[in-house]
Image (cartoon, helix red, strand yellow):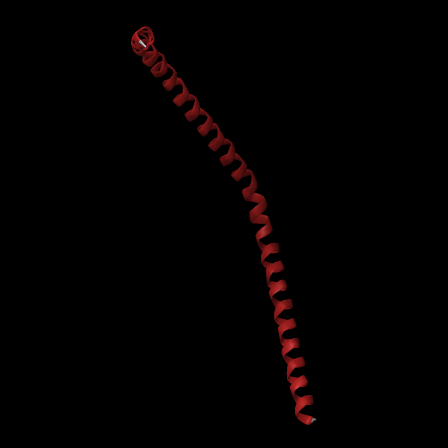
Length: 91
């Protein structure tokens, strides 16, 4: 019987130590969040500006690619039209 009581005593000590470690980890996480909050608040506008610039660059690159592809498509249509008409006439 004493062995069973000693076993449960060791389990309770282990549970207490585990609960203490969990509380310590949560306290460390909260402390780190509180310390880093001012840095995060300072960096949010910078990230917003970077995001806007990134979207503007992507939109500009897309517009340039589209503007280059339209004349190429027109040239392809001009040069391919006689062959398409001939193929339709012979086909």
